[in-house]
Image 1 (cartoon, helix red, strand yellow):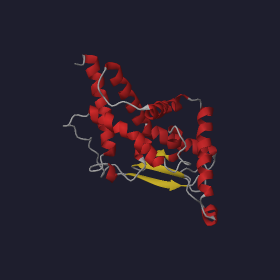
Image 2 (cartoon, helix red, strand yellow):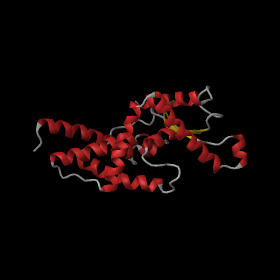
Image 3 (cartoon, one colour):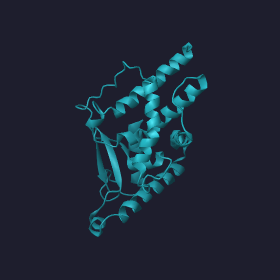
Image 4 (cartoon, one colour):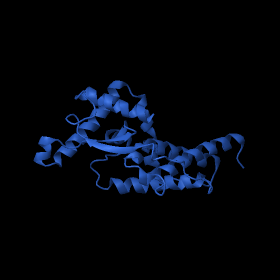
Length: 220
């Protein structure tokens, strides 16, 4: 039997589980969203999974547990929030390092014509016309290289199974996913090239930093 404080904590975790259920609910929501939105939610998912697993272990609930690989992944993933604790100089350095990695990767796999006329090196998410995330932010969040590992998709999928199990543990069978109005919330993505074909007029490193700032503040 949970005490009042534990019950309140359980309800909060359950609300997070319901949100994650909404993200991946293919029947009602996910199929209507043409975007990289799940990857944009990775830090949130990491905080949920690591926090829920630790909390259940602490109070003795028989919830799913991490194996060693999952533990390492979610601990590192949860630390992604420390990006917001960096100085501007540290944040800019990490951001531009990830951007140049992306640019080099996509430059090397493009044809000569694409290199001349422009190629895509940043994928950007939009919600109702406002930027709300991009692939460089994803690379900053993830605890491993998202470009060089050809099996990155299956790897993330396999490491995410335990999150689904934790969410299911907290979800009441009567709970439905949160409603999502795809008629009034238009979510999509656009691939672009920085700096040639970019959504911002300032076509230099500072412009790219400002663009990432817009994406982060939209998420918050």
